[in-house]
Image 1 (spheres, rainbow, N blue to C red):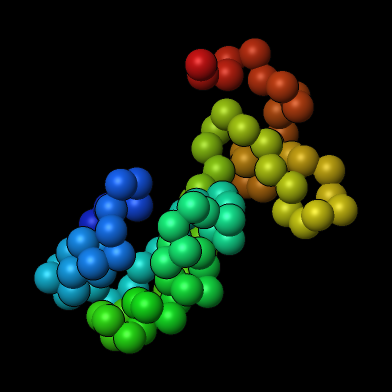
Image 2: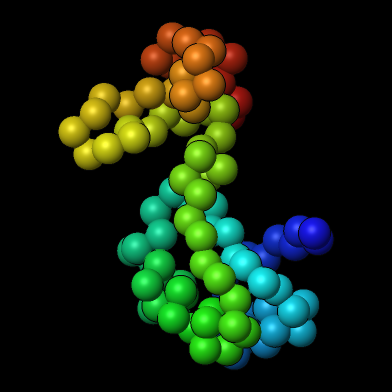
Length: 102
């Protein structure tokens, strides 16, 4: 398995999907924390899933845990309190760790 990275900023849909097609990807793993409210319509979750299948024959997966770094808390569901990423792995930290990167 080969792993590539690609950004969405300042890319047209044509450039983005042609790059993926040339790389012959089988799956795109979206690690954005929020994958439904982007400026470019083709980068929204459902649109991205559709265009990946149509242009590249590629699968789409959203992996939320890969998007959360060590410096920001997240809520596993809308009604749950935010927790730090390391707490998911049973390493409990203070809500606002003093070693936060800036």
